[in-house]
Amino acid sequence: MTRWIAAFGAGLLFGIGLIVAQMTNPAKVIGFLDITGAWDPSLAFVMVGGIAVYASVYWLLRARGARPLLIPEFHPPHAKLIDRRLALGAIVFGLGWGLSGFCPGPAITGAGFGEPKVWVFVAAMLAGMMAYRLRGRRAVSTPVDDDD
Image (cartoon, rainbow, N blue to C red):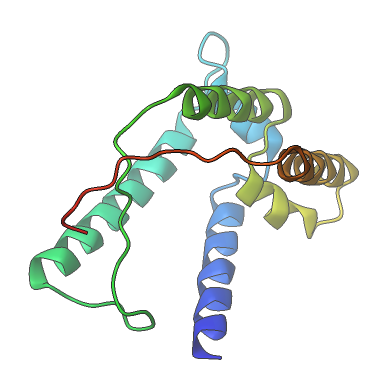
C-alpha cells in the first residue's frame, strides 16, 4: 500500500509540475519546437531545471551509497546500444509530439481538463500501444553490464 501511495504522490507532483510549466498546452510546446519561427525557449528552462534536480539528487544518493525506501535496490538504465528500433521509436515519438504538441505524460495530465483534442490524442496513443502489443513483441537483445 505504501508503494501505491508513493506512486500516486509522485504522479500527482509530476502532473502539477507539467501544468505549472504549461507542458499540457500544445501551443506552448509547438512554440518551443518551432525553432525557425517564433521560438519560445521557456520549456528549455523547464527541462534543464528538471535535469539539474534529478542529476544532483541521483549523484548525491549514489555517492552516499543510499538505498531506495520502497524497493531493495535502484535500477538505473543499463542499455548502451542505439539500435534501429530505438531510433525509429524516437522518430515516431518526435513526429507525434511535433504534430500534436503532446507527449504521453502531459496528454494524460491534460485529459483531466476535458479538452476533446487531448482525448483524441490519448485514444490514438492507446490504440498505438494496443497495436504494438497485438502485433507481438519480438525479443530484444540488450547488452547488460555484469556488475548489476
